[in-house]
Structure formats: C-alpha cells, structure tokens
Image (cartoon, rainbow, N blue to C red):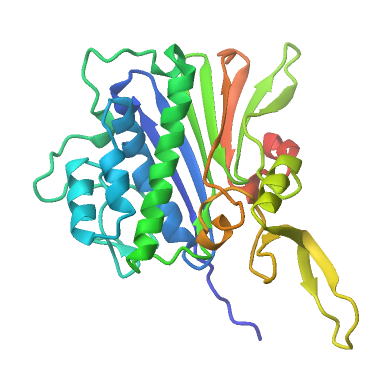
Amino acid sequence: MIPNIKKTNQDSSLIVRDLAGVKGLWLFGIMDGHGVNGHLVSDLVKRTLPSVLASIINGRNFDNTRKSLISGKKNLIKKSIQSRNTYLPPLVNGSVKGRGSQNNSFNYQPQNGESSTDPYQSGDATFQDTWLTSDPILRDRQIHESFRICQDKIEQMNDMSKLDSMFSGTTVVTVLMQGDTVVCANSGDSRAIMCSTNSAGVWYYKALSRDHKPEEQDEANRVRKMNGRIEQSRMIPQGGGLPQFFGPKRVWLKTKQAPGLAMTRSLGDLVAKSVGVTYEPEIKSFTDLKQGTDKVLVIASDGLTMRRETLMGL
C-alpha cells in the first residue's frame, strides 16, 4: 500500500492596491515554487517584490542594498535591509520567524525600530498617478530591477546557508493594472490571461504572458550559448542499449543529468543559472483594456492554465 504523503503547497500569491501610493495602481502576482525549497523561495519573493518595487517607484536607490546582499557580510546585509525598509522578516531554520513554513500569506509585522507605515503605501500625496504610462522605458527598468533584487536576495540567503536554492526556485508572473493599461512581467511558465467577450457575447482570451520553455527558439539559443544542454529526460534500458527519451524538454548541464529544469527563466535555481536560465522578466504592456468587454484577469500556475479554453469554461 502506498502511503498518503501530503504534498507541500509551493504556490504563493499577492494582491496590492495603490502600490507605492499611486492611486488606482494594482499589483497582482503568482509565484509557483519548485524543488525541495520551492515553497520558501516563492514566499520570499512574494514578501520582497512588492515593497522593493514600491520603494524604487518612490525614488529610493537600492545600489547599496544590492552590494551588501552579494557581499556575504551578515552585519552589512542586516543593516542595509533595515535601513532601506525592504520589509523582509528574517528566515529562521527554513521558515519565517513567527510563522509556520506552510503559511504563505503576507502578514508583515514591523521589526524593532521600524515604522508601522504600510510599506506598499509609502508614496506622498503629490506623487503623480501616471507612473504606469508616463515613461514606459523607465517603468520597465524599474520592474526589471525589482526582479534582480529578489534574485540577489535569494542568492544571499543561499550563501548564508539559510535557504538552499541550488536546485530550488520559483516562477513569477505579475500584472500591474491602472485604468485601461495593463503591464505583465513574467519569468517562467506561470501565465496571465485576459478573458473577454465580443459583441455577440462569445468568450475569448488574450495571453498577456509567454511561457519560457526550452521549446522556444530564442530561449533555447540563450541556454546553448551558455554551454547548457536541452533535451528530454533519458532512461537507460535495463538490458543496455541506447537511452530512451521521455517527457518535456529540459535544461541540463553540458555533461551532467542536472538540474533538469523544464523552464528557461525563474528566480532561484542557482545551478541552472550557470547555463543560461535567467531571472530576467519578459515585460509586455497593453493599453487597450476595455471595461465593458474585458471581464476576467486570470494569473495562475501552469497546472491550472494548461488548457486556456477549459479555464474560460469555469
């Protein structure tokens, strides 16, 4: 008899209203962890990304924070994180201090000496409400930087032996929405979909994100340029002979059967990063959101969105 082993939920989600004090600016996100510590990586990103992006939008400089995060000096890391108000509760023995490791909900409590002000609502009253549309190039750079800082934090936690992320990581798909503008930033194979109706009332969907898979030619080219190998999993027959290949294409080291990652972008996954898997988000913007016909925004992990038509039927 096979024992009933409960699988850890490695998904995390976030919803933030009026991000950085920008009126009407919504941030939605899904993180789908994988690997032994995938749930911890996804939770770390969920707790870090919104406050980092909010701080960047409000003009804070994270250069010093990034330098301390990768320096490996614990005292500088602690000082920098506290001084920049990144609102990352400390991880203790693989779980968040004061919370169980299975609880992936955001419930930030101010640390000693910190303000109790909501870290997501830190903008002043005079901050312009057009951040999402006024300067798309700057906006995308700021979004990219927030992903990079999250990756730096994951690497720092790994270096301090607090969170092993050599073979663990997470997808990240976020959607920023304000008025009729939607901006999707995606790293991995979680998806963002807009479900709409036409004039006849028939449902249809528009993909806001692209799956970052080894099957995508540009993604595969990047991995191969970094000396990575892309192929299916292999199995050697018991009687010998040529290997048999099965399953989806995966990313491997050149001469080793590892890590076998089925996506080409993610946060974490430090071994895969050495062969071209990148944290960098693909950012797409849409400025034609229609209040009357665009009905439902869906952001979900790959298991739920494998069949978009089925999802719309729900």
